[in-house]
Length: 181
Image (tube, rainbow, N blue to C red; front, top):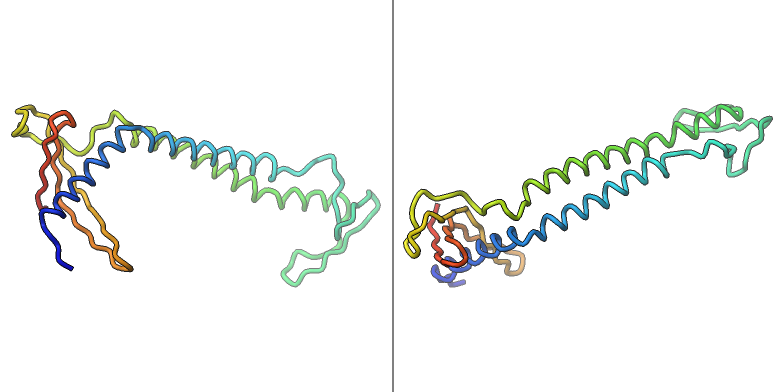
C-alpha cells in the first residue's frame, strides 16, 4: 500500500477540525445527558418498582397463593431449603427483591455522577486542545491551539493509524499545521 505523506497529514488535520467542530456543536453533551437521564430513570424504576414487593399481597409457594395457615416446603440442593410459614415466606420474598433495589440505586447514583462529568467535560464553550504561546503566522493573533490527533483507516481487518500534533487557529483564520510528536 503506497502512502502519500501529504495526504495523511491532510487527513490528520481534517480529523482534528471535525473533532473541534463536533465539540463546539454541543450535540455530544446533549446526547450524553439524555442517555444518562434515561439510565437514571431505569435505575429508579428497578429500585422502586421491580425491587419493591407488594406488602398487601399474599406470598406464593410453587405458583399457588398461600393463606395464613399454609406451610411451604422448599427443597434445595444449594441450601436455603426447609419448611416455611406464611410470615417467613413474606420475609423471603422481600429479601429477594433487595438485589434489584441495590442495582437500581447504584445505577441511578452512577448516572447522576456521570451526568455531572458529561456537563463539565463536554462543554461546548471549552476550548479544543491546549493554547500555544506563539502568534498565528496567517492572522498574527495569539489564537493557536494544538492537540495530538490520530486518524485511523481500516482496510479489511487491518487498521492503519496516523498521528501528529495538529495546530489550528480560529475557523475564521483557517490556519492549520501538523507535526510529528
